[in-house]
Image (cartoon, rainbow over all chains, first blue to last red; front, side, top):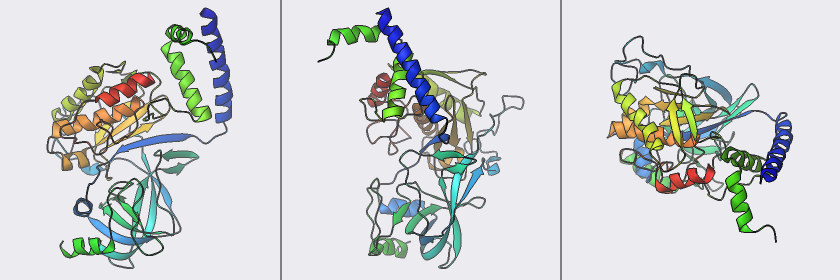
Length: 201
Length: 178
């Protein structure tokens, strides 16, 4: 049995050497996995979003690196995990920045929130490539430049808007002008649904 | 027809577990194969016992975060997560302008977990359980677990106010990988 172990170790080492040398030419990848809320109904999506728009993506995108929001500095213990921590205790570790891709989008129609048709806003999605290093979520399908979507967004005073989640925050508009949910999104939605939600808001 | 089952059973016992994982990882990377279970996540830690740098937050966060480590350590799996000041892996809890509750970033041999105090405090009805649920989920990625749609701590649709422990499927997956 020792022979078997030795053979396995040798085979593994050889395979690892071949694999690692093959990988050395590949761009480095950092894998992200985010835990997002999910939504069961269109009403839940609509109520959670602060901005719901039909929007056309521009032809450009910019990758940015963000660190935590300094607005966390408050006295509420739940929204600021550092509140009430005695000085001298271990400082938080250095934060690795969060890499996002920021897309300029032109607002086509507003269903909820304070935006106007024709206005340009910024929308971000997790991931992007910085200095040859790619940050990405496995299986993610990023927004596509030049395409039109209905977007369910959360807005911030200090950062581009975010999709409620990567699968349910965007509904591509198909050639017939209908909302086409991504395959992973069980919530079907039509324009009349959206108009109703907007009218009853 | 290949070697008898008994041969492989005996051989498996003699081969160190870490070697088996290395072989599996190489197979996955080279030929795109995945382990038998469906929720393999290729960027977890190579060992189920790993460390994380000590963290210090207020009592609303510290207890629920510590409970997350304990919840994994209590599972019938080889998972064991402990604190060590020499660890390269870390957790940061603070406010982020994004919609996620937690974010796991794999840097190869180490990870950083981010907990978003803005979304967690905004959506939790049972705050303590919510923090634990999110942190247990993120540590699950460290144990090679991917998202799924089952009764699982890795399900996006779980009730974070009540589900705070790894479920049978999660334990089974960890035992499959390690």
